[in-house]
Amino acid sequence: MAAVLLIEDDQRIRQSLARALADRGHHVVSAATGMTGVEQAVSGEVDVVVLDLGLPDLDGRKVLQMIRAVSSVPVIVATARDEETEIVGALNEGADDYVTKPFSAEHLEARITAVLRRTIAPDAPTVITVGDLTIDSGAHEARLAGTVLDLTSKEFDLLAYLASRPGVMVGKRELLAEVWRQPYGGADKTIDVHLSWLRKKLGETAAEPRYLHTRRGVGVKLVAPES
Image (cartoon, rainbow, N blue to C red; front, side):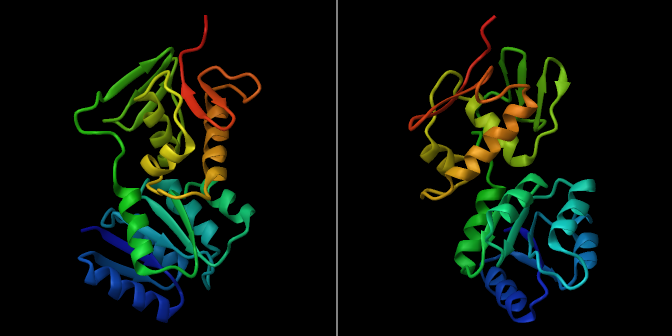
């Protein structure tokens, strides 16, 4: 059971989702405006936020930025906006997932479960070192040459999953299933976007990779840079 905050101005949708999630055992609170949602999101009393972007007082992207400024609570954007610029923008601003309307309560609950589920097994090493890169799953922290990397939750999950398989070429289908918990196609761009962000933070590019090496049509692997 999770404590879910729904930030949604449409009363019909808000009540319907709240009822469906509550029937599935979740504790649900809701907000009809962005500012009320921000106050509840940063209270420390919710496990995950489901955020609509079309709010009456603030744009949902602004609400996301305000939440991310003070909290790492997982945020799932749930909106009618399906433009790629909106999706990439929200992910870049700290959203952990993005789902477009219309969607079922079952679909949303699966996204909530996926966001809250950790990809690293309990008996896996909590600290992994690859070259000058150190990934501490217990602290949810990654360092490069001793400097803490400013990673989003999903960037860290992706890096940690690759680090748990150093030198192994991991396919996009596996990454979608194990990191995004989406055992179906259609989200290759999401992986590519997150890999691009990771490369920037690791000080490399696709043309001149150091840690992240991709092979078209095969996948990506994390290796220590050649000296």
